[in-house]
Length: 278
Ligand SMILES: Nc1ncnc2c1ncn2[C@@H]1O[C@H](COP(=O)(O)OP(=O)(O)OP(=O)(O)O)[C@@H](O)[C@H]1O
Ligand SMILES: [Mg+2]
Image (cartoon, rainbow, N blue to C red; front, side, top):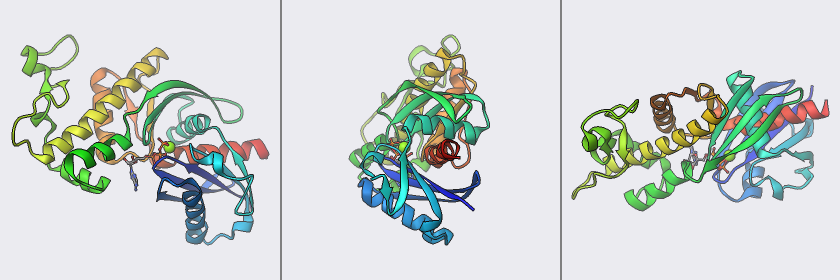
């Protein structure tokens, strides 16, 4: 029996996945931006919860921005580094079941990858991205709403209405423009009035971030003729995922947020290392 761990040390959270013979046995996520502490914490939580002895783990496949500070023998287990964009691309294909797709990783920021299934893993190409992502929601939420947690921001947003703070195409031109419906956003936060409700600001934030991510992903996907095959991964909250998919559909694209999307890079890394070392 051979166990592998895929470890994705991200800017906000660290994800770890335990894999045995290609099968996912357990998944954990821990918050924190200090890479070594987060990595050790995630591996510790994973082995404790799954009741697997660490010595039974053959390899820890590390990816994510924080992976570079891990040693080749991490916690006494051989560790290999996997390129983050390749791990994201392969993980997106594995989770979606597609052979080719645009994988948009909505993490602290957003990175967009073209992924094509290869003999070992995926052939991934970085197409671009945007600094607007989950970190923007947390940061602007703190700044504008005096809420210190993502949960608090999302709770507020669930009771708000983005159209109370946005101008729509109808507001500006009185009807639809080309294939853009009249309900589309013409100006995010273009309607702020005195006494604006924090709930509406929170909902407007989720909408704006969703629309930016969807628009950038759509243009990247369109460039590759894959606008109907966009896979969104990352720890994106459900409300943000819904906004992204809605905005993408309005543009004429089609996307999915697969199950376990937060673990895409960790799953990709684990599976790449299992193929490379088997
Ligand atoms: N439990 C959580 N703790 C912290 N952030 C969370 C949590 N759940 C969802 N999030 C959201 O996920 C975002 C981070 O997403 P993710 O974990 O995919 O990114 P990351 O891998 O840490 O960052 P990056 O890939 O950009 O380096 C946060 O900014 C926040 O909006
Ligand atoms: Mg990440």
